[in-house]
Image (cartoon, rainbow, N blue to C red; front, side, top):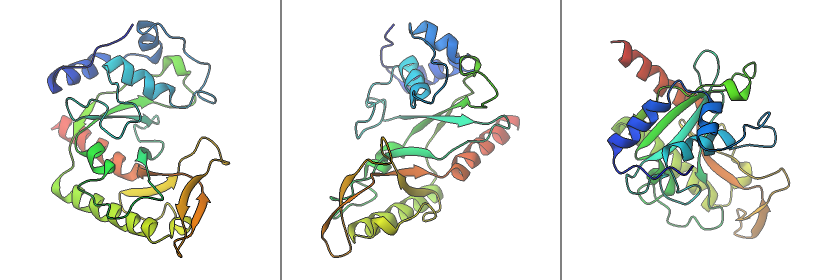
Length: 226
C-alpha cells in the first residue's frame, strides 16, 4: 500500500500520532512488507518503513522528506531508558566542492529547519517485529541552537575546503559532527588535500550528536509532564 504525501503539517502530525505505540510488525503488515529477522543486512529498513507509513518521498534528495511542507523526518533509535543509541545522519558532505559554502544555503540547514523526530525502540533484547514507535516531536531549532549549529557547520566546511578532511575527527563540533558515511570501509569519495591536490578519501556525512538529540527528547518529556 502506498501512502500519499500529507497535505499539511497538521495532517502529518496526526499520522505520526496515529502510529505512536504501534509495532514495526503492524506498520510492515499495513504496507504489505515482511519484517527482516534483524538489521544486519537491512540497514535503513526502520527509517524507510516509517517514511513510507507517513507518506514521505524525498529519500536522499537534498531537500526535506516532505518538500511541500518543508519538513524533514528523522527516526531516532532509542534504548530502554528512552535515550538515543547513536548519532543522527543529516546529509552527505561534499568533499570536493564546498567553496563558498555557507550555513544559510547548505543542505544541512535546509534539512534541520523543521524536523519531525520519531523515536523507535531499538533495544536489542526486543525482537525487531515487536519494537514500537514512540511519540513524535515536531521541532525547529531555537535561535541559540541554530547559532551553534551554524558555527559547527562553518568550522567543518572550512576544514574540508582547506583540505584537512582526513584529519577531522568526530570530536569536532558541539552539536554537529563529521563522520565517515559509506556503504563499506572500502568506499571512497573525491576530495582535496591541504595542497589542493585531489585525493580519494572515505565519504563523510554531517551528523547530530546523540547528546543533542537526547536533550531534545528530555526537554519534550519535561514539557509534556508540566
